[in-house]
Length: 394
View 1 (cartoon, helix red, strand yellow):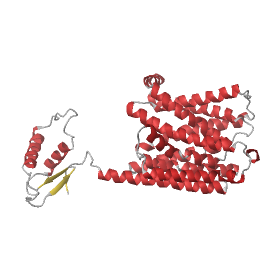
View 2 (cartoon, rainbow, N blue to C red):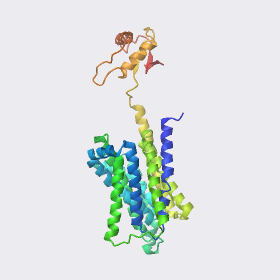
View 3 (cartoon, rainbow, N blue to C red):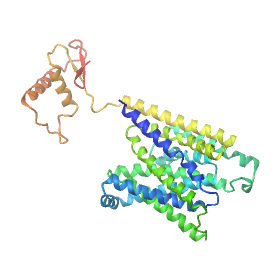
View 4 (tube, rainbow, N blue to C red):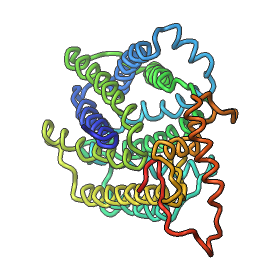
């Protein structure tokens, strides 16, 4: 039988494996296709599949509409951040190298920490400051060949590579803002249907692409229809299938563990591209990427260990420790009843006691009287004591 934590890791890893070919899919359409048209159709497919999934999960279209109408303002905030991601991810992968784009996008945990510090009053720990310094250094390594050699953009096989890198960084910022927006809104709206934000953001991203094409007089022409529609539809399937697992995994593991798992996409994505297209990252990208992934993994690992240490120190609500002399003649069943009452299981939210059978009430009263009679002076104890934890003698 798998533990909840192991189940969370499995869900997270399966989700990352499913979504990892997305970088390859963004590169499979013909190079002659307009990247704005590819992005628009990709977002429309994601919007369609997200709508169908959301309707199925909410129990009907009218239920989903009522939920969305009741939370329209927070959903617009979430959708605004998600629109940046919906536009930036596919565009950056089509303009620059896949390894560079995924590595720069993977900076999102650090941008999220900065946004939370600036707008939500989060504390920025030392480990995050050190990780930010390491991330800046790794970005410098990735960009250094163009700075040192001074090579012009038109000499690169991808003439808009620098623009793609900058869009990838902006996408990471959008992801960081999205996480903080969801956290901020869920604190105030417990029943927030966040999946509606995904629908709105992809609809908005598709509209932006179409309007930009119309404003710049780009032709709405598909060069290879079969290849085009096949890859864009597969993008929508992959994204929605992956998020089915991503929505479940955080219920069993914490944010730091989930962040470590998500780093696998920055490793698996370029491998898919290399295997099918033959695009290998440059030595500078490999060096900067290794430093970046090591920095992010170390940051998430330290966060995980710190959280666990704080959890062990913090008292739990369900565990009560009662010191009882071993010779006071209380039966284990009576001890269990006392521990149940001490943990709050025998009290309503308003503080009133639940109705209990007379024998159980008398047992609890006896234990209660016995506990009250053992308020001994710690300088003169009555003798060795035994601990009762959750109703069991240890």
